Length: 227
Picture 1: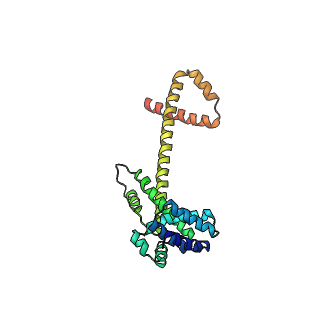
Picture 2 (picture 1 turned 90 degrees about the horizontal axis):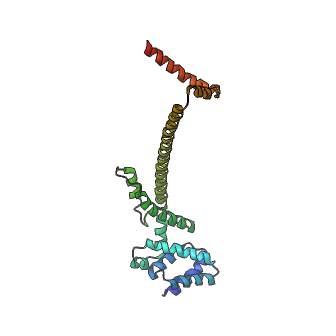
C-alpha cells in the first residue's frame, strides 16, 4: 500500500476526531519520511474531508515529532496501531492536548540541557550536575517526569538569579557607601567651622539628635583620654 492510500484512509479517521490517527500518522511519517509531497498530499486529503488546514498542519507537526518514538524503519513498519497507542499511553499521552504538552516539555528539557552547562564554574556543584544529567531524556521518559525535571530546573535557575541579585545589590550599596564617604570627607575638609555650624543649624530635630549623639561620643572619648 502506498502512502497515498494510507493517508487517504487516515484523513477520514482524523476528520472524525480520532486520537489514534496521530499515532498512525507518526508511523507513516517514520516509514515514508517528511518529504514535501507526502505532507502536501496529507493536507489535501484532510481538506477534502472537511478538516481545517491549520488542524491538519498541527497534526503533521506532532507526527513529525513523534516519529522519534520508533527506533527504526522496521520498528515503525511492524508496529500495530494498538501497540503504538500503548507506547503513547505509557509515557502519559492519551489525547491531542497531552501530545502537545509532551512535545513542548520534551523540547524545553533539551534546551535546558545546554543552558544549565552555562552555570558551571570551577567549583563542583552536585545539584547542578544532577540536573544536567536529568536532561538525558528519551521517548521513554514520561510526561510527568518531564514536567518534574522542568520544575526542578526552573527552581534552581530562580534561586541562582536571586542570589546573584542580592550580591549585585550589596555590591552597588558598597560602592555607594564608599563614594559617599569620599564626598563627605571632601566636603568636611573644604568647610570652615562657622560654615559647619550654619549647616547644622538648618537640620531638624531628628537630624540634630543624630549629630548630638555623635558629638557626645566624641566628648566622652576626649574626656576619657584626658583623664
